[in-house]
Length: 440
Image (cartoon, rainbow, N blue to C red; front, side, top):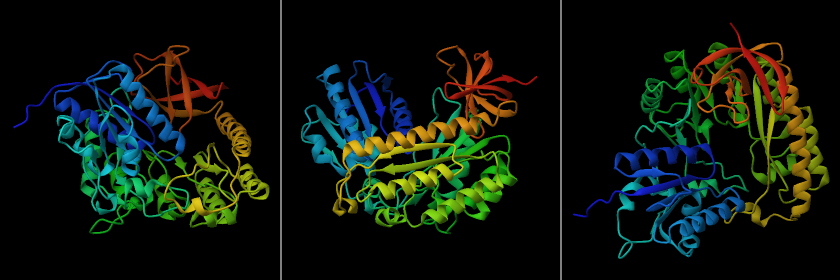
């Protein structure tokens, strides 16, 4: 029987909230096994890098982190996991210092694998992600130093948008069983988290694979009705999955945060068709306008891509004009990035990098204006704000997020305010944030 060695471990994460949830579970299991978590920048016995591969830049960042770990301790055991590890394991094993590459399908085994010696042991632990048919549950993982808990309830995606590598990295859509969602939420609430953010790769597909089949609305209504003192927030949802039933939940339950992040990607119908998005610009506009009609103070975040193959000036202007007209709160703008194995690689013509940067800059400027316009609407009004663990770095004052996801700086120091929801009267907008005074 192999002797277990206690190690100091540096763990770092790239990418989305789902990946961060996975890392929180790994951290919890490491500590339960007796290992000591240390900052990734310090000298450690082992380093774990949980990677993203949505863009080529994310791949570059992962390779940089591997080399940084190697420099920090040339003798350390470097383990690479996550989406880059799942899709391109051979590329990673070719990098000097990498001891082990663990795909997403085996991520839950990292603590077990960490103890294996490098000799006579496979350097790659990954298999066909599409063979994974069930959601892999992990132990309850508290979010140290946070007042909001991110709770992964769904993984994988069946959509296969032409630009997207995520289905190849995460596999088919899989859902955490209904009762496990309720129990998981109770675990966070019992640890005094005031807000739970429900996350997934394709959150709107929650429950479609379960037997008996269920859906996001039914599960969400159960959570909201059973936990009226806890705020719940959805991380992201596709436009065609915003049903009237979901809109009704926002009006019926004040603990469902009025905030939706709704990917658009393009405002041009021909580009949307080539992207294999299953909606057009008009239907997207109708859904967003319907949501805002039902909830006037809701925050709407929008993902938009620039430089997809075939995007000429006309197609870009269609996107720009749609975004100018939509009641958006903020924009998440990113340039198209070629991803291996995706259908978009065959689409021509390509958009040059200079044009991508110019278009991204135009949309980011628009996003900043929309954020300011939306934020200024609340000056003189009150908002419920959940105060975070860390104070504002510049002032030392308390800071937090409103129910509709606006960052707010408070008028008092943070020590006695943490993890409390206050009614805050908003006084001004400054440097991208609201400032306010706690009522009463």
